[in-house]
Length: 79
Picture 1: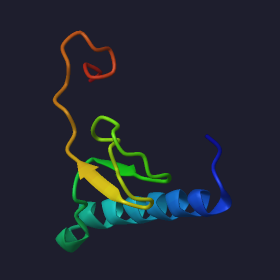
Picture 2: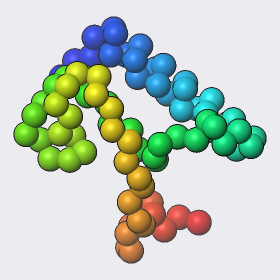
Picture 3: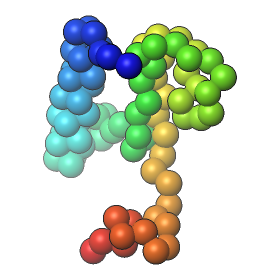
């Protein structure tokens, strides 16, 4: 799949918003809290996929919590 310019702008804008919101939340601005740890954005509508990729509409977004660390995972177990 290739990205079109508007997809790249959308993802870039979202990344900037998440970065600024995270900094503001760390600084005590609780109104900037994000809805979850992972965001799935539907850049192309695809029905019938398994979650969290089962977004049925273009530009639909879904926030999800982080999954618990897995034992034996070298990334999860880093200090």
